[in-house]
Length: 55
Image: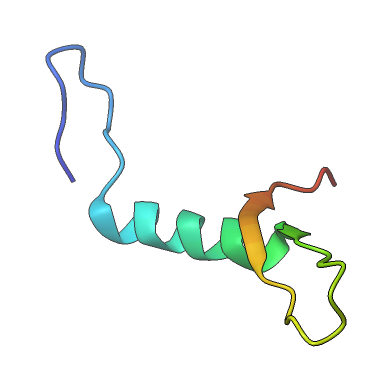
């Protein structure tokens, strides 16, 4: 852990990784998928985003 000049502890990389993992576990995934008119054409993912869910 590193201290700033104000003696405030900065977050460690390990803690940041843990927070990111928790965010990913709790996030809702929103996907925008194409809807082709031709029934033989497979839909494709146009966009995918993770959105944090409130507690």
